[in-house]
Every structure is written in structure tokens, then in C-alpha cells.
Length: 155
Image 1 (tube, rainbow, N blue to C red):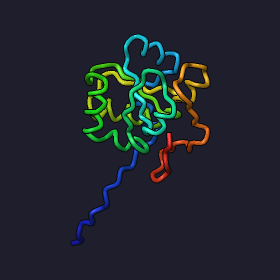
Image 2: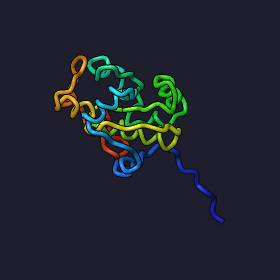
Image 3: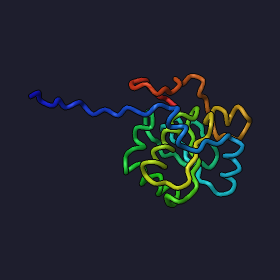
């Protein structure tokens, strides 16, 4: 009889295509309309990037590199507190829309948030479309997030 070998536990995010098939994504103009109708805008990027520049009216609740923090109960509680409850409509964004998609997936499918969407193209597409931004938002120098473990996400 062979002994069972314990494998190390390591967070491996699901493929981005799967994540995006399980969530709602909205284009920036549609997101802007929802925000004007009362949806809470959440920037999931790191605080340093938020301080440099962000979308007007956004609250910053960073979900960490590749949205790893979004699986934690404490993260879901922080978002619920910032939004005023899990039932409030949320619009999430990051640099290019990948980290926010992963975060939206975790909030909706692991933590029971009822109305959460991610902005397609993130703050980059938002700015490219000429929509208002507070401060300077530059994602050109950032590495694009991939769904491969170990690659750094700086959005």
C-alpha cells in the first residue's frame, strides 16, 4: 500500500475565459450610466495606483495581485461595508479589466453578492473613450495580467 502524498496548497486562478463567462461585464458608457443611477464604483487596484489617479467617485478596496485577496471573507466584508451591503449594485474596475473580472467572479460566486459587474477594458478603455478621470491614470507601463500563476499583475 502506498502512502498518500500531501500536495502543497497554492492558489491557482481559474482561466480568465471561464471567469468572464460567469460574470457580467459592461462597457464604460454603460457602467457610467449605472454609476449615475446609484451603483457603487469600486477600484480593485493597489492603493498607490488609486492615489495617483482613479475614476471619479470610486472607493478603493484592493483585491491584491491577480485578485487573490478576493477569495477571503475579510475582503468580501470590506466591499460590503464600502458599498452598504451585498445587495447594492457594484461596478468594479482595474487597469484593463482582468483583476476586476476575477474579483467580480469571487464576490458573486463565492461570497453571494447579488449585483456585481466588471468594466470591460478597465480604466484604460474608460480613459481612451474620454470619460472623466481624477488625477493621472497610466496603464501603458503596466504588465498585462494573465491567468498564469506567478506572473505579476500590476493593474
